[in-house]
Length: 350
Image 1 (cartoon, rainbow, N blue to C red):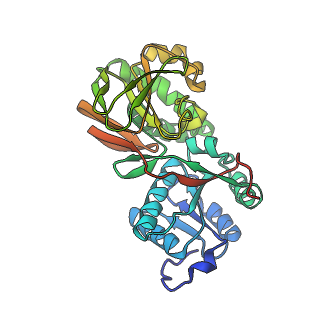
Image 2: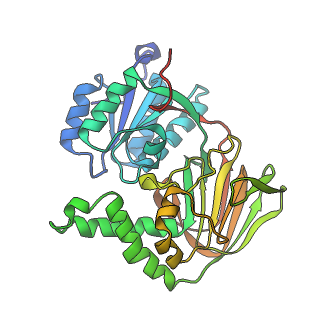
Image 3: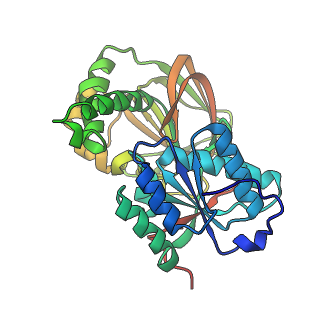
């Protein structure tokens, strides 16, 4: 595996190589998997990160060497962390950021549904490395800038709470031999939502939120997906009680749930969804919510490029699927430049 102390290494030696960054703390990252990757990836191109300082050092090495493609092996959070670190490092050095890709080893993996990464097993990861050389095309992917973090999605409210509930449920299910086979993935997530998140949320007050447009005109989207009206800079686009405020540049949440059906409508806007749906509505309409077809007066959709969110009291927040604590005020902007990503759905380069 890699030694990151090579400041004199010529960049052209890495011009046709692929760096693979593995989240060493991910439960699906075993010693056997690292050994398998180490045999497939060219010597020195496999990086295992177990801490933030290690991630910073790896990002610096990757940019210094000039890898054209970087794959992250983990979930959405691993991808978000490394894209943010590497992109910031590249811009500080005034060089072009690399192309990014995902090897699916996490849990929800919203990006895997967008980019075509295979199932989270050793065989799928190995297959994706092979597909990269044979059929992996490229495309641009817009990201959000949330507190300096580059991410495809973020949210405040029930989605952040559900992530904490999912982690607790997953640990409990994996500790029991009878439920261990279902202790990760969609079954555990749905169990957490139905048994922990929704019952607890019945007793929670609906916090008041105020969202102001900081950028170009915001488009209010109607139930049929068509624009309803524009909201100008400085105007309030939503004020009232809510259970979730979520933003995304991709249609999917974890496990293939199409929570943002309008995210692909415009390249110069991200999707903002403000939700005050009840637990009973979720339970009755879970299939339509999952596939993105559910419409209601309690769901408000907007297309934005910069907003300010204010809660009366601190509210739980997640960025890229990782809980980051509670916030009262948050600004969210469309990142100034898209990144290039490996997309197995896209045509391969000619």
